[in-house]
Every structure is written in structure tokens, then in C-alpha cells.
Length: 133
Image (cartoon, rainbow, N blue to C red; front, side, top):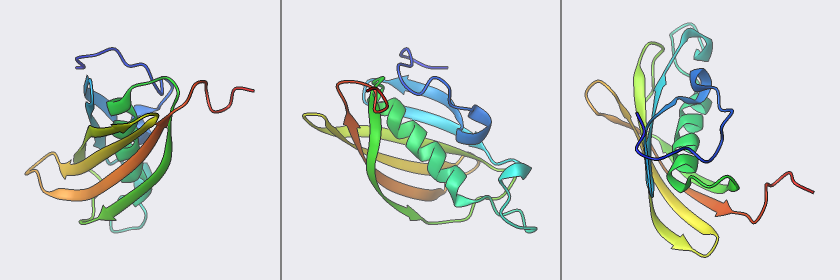
């Protein structure tokens, strides 16, 4: 499953944000299956928030620090995801500036590899947990 121990977001529900497939220094892959509870309408459109959630989770795993948080994201939804489809969120962290990590994420259909979402996530590694006093 993973190449490295997961150090962040230990309580993520894989049925909502996807499950880690690969976690390695500076990169991660998360698989999300769009289930009926994710449907936005009667046509079976998966709400984009779930796709974003999988991409965000992949970004956090690519940084893989217990105190990583998302500061900003620039994203593009390129294609719809349907209930029943599986997607893979692939994250790479090519840029580090002090506490800041810029993570590139691409989400593709598991069947066929079509890109459905791209994003750049500005992540920050804090000295302590964001909710610590």
C-alpha cells in the first residue's frame, strides 16, 4: 500500500476523502471511489467537494508532517465524476520554501487516466498543531 509511514491526518475517513495508495517523500496517491452518498443530483454527479477532499488529502500526505495545514488552493475542475467511478489523486511536492510547501495535484479517472481535476495547494508546516494553545 504505502512506501512511508503516514504522519498526518490519522483520522481521515477513507470513504469520504479516499484511501492512501502510495506515500513517499514528496509524493502521494489517494484513491477515491465515488459512492451514492456523494451524489449531488439524480444524474449521479459526484459533488466536487469530495474530489477536492481527495486532492487535499493527497497534498497533505505528500508533505506528511503532523502539523501540516492547507493555506490556499488554486484548482480547476475539468471533467465531471460520476457515482461509481474511482479516481486517483496524485500529489507531488516539488517546491519547499521554509515552512511553505507548494504541492501540485492531478486527479485522474482510474479507468482510462483522463484528468478530471488539477490544483496547486499551498501547505504550511507549523511548529505545533494549528489547534494547540
